[in-house]
Amino acid sequence: MNRKRIIITFILAAVVAAITGISAAAASFSQFWKQSSDESWYIEDNSGRRITDAWLCDDAVAENGKDVWYLLDEWGNMITDGLVKDGTGNYYSLETEHNGYFGMLRYRSGNYGGVYLDLEGSHAGSFAAIKNAEGVNALKQKYGLRDVSNINNSNIVYTSSFGAYEEDYSGTYQFRNGQTWEGMFTLIKIDKDHYEVSKNEDGEVRTALLTRDYDYDREQGRSDQATFEISSCSGYSHESDLNDEGYITIVGEELYTHGLHYEGDVGWEAAAIYVKVYG
Image 1 (cartoon, rainbow, N blue to C red):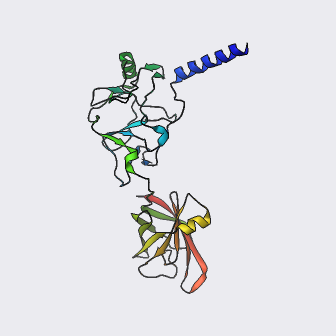
Image 2: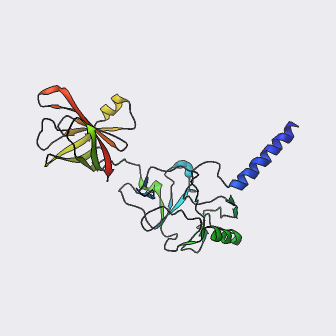
Image 3: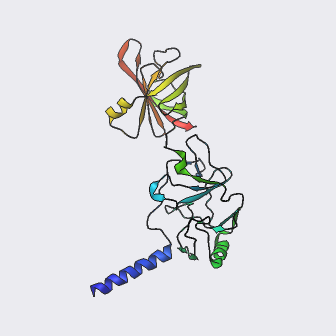
C-alpha cells in the first residue's frame, strides 16, 4: 500500500512538472545586471559598456553553466517576448512570466502555459531552438512574433569574460538630511579604491580624493558597505561635509558623511545623508 502511494506521488509530481513547465531550480543572476527607471533590465561589463544586439550567456554564475541565456536589443534592454526569430532563422521562446526566470531563454522541453515545446538540447549552434512546428504556431497565436534577425551567432557574449565584478559608486547624490550643508556630491571612479569627489558648497565647487579604508570596514564588521577617507580637499570650511580626515560611507544608494569637525575642535562631529539620484 505504501509503495502504491509512493508511485502515485511520483506520477502526480511528474504531471505537475509537465503542466507548469517550471524548472527545478531558479536561475541566478550575475551582479552585472542593472535596472532602468522604466524597469527595463540591461547589462554592463566591467568598463561600464552596455551590451547590445546580442545573445548573452550569464555564466559568471557558476551554477548557470552555459544554459542560461538572454536576448538584448539595440539599446541593451532585455527582450522578453514569448516568441522570437533570430538571424539564424531559428525560433526561440523567452519567459514572459515573473516567476524567477523572466526574460530567460526557455531551454527545457516541456509545457509552457499550455503550449508544448520540443527544444534543442545540444550546444551545437542552435541551443534551445524550437523543433516542433505546432509549438511555433501555437506561440505565434499566443504572443505574436518578434523578428530579431539583426542578432545571430556572430554576437554572443559571456558574462564570465567580464572578469571579477567591481562595484562602481560613481554618480550624483542629493542631500536628504543631517547636520551639514545641503546640495549634491558627485563621485567619479578612478579605480576600485579611489574616487574623485566634488561638492558645490555655497556657490564654490570643492574637490577631494576618496581612498578606501579597509581597516574601517573590518572594524565595523560590515560587508555591505564601503568607507572612504577624505583627503586633498581644495580649500577648507569649518562646517563643511567635505573636509580632510572625514569619511564617506556608501551603503546601497545612500552616502553618509561622518567624522567631520570644526577646525581645532575634534569633539564635534557633523554628519549628513545623501541619496543617489543619477549616474
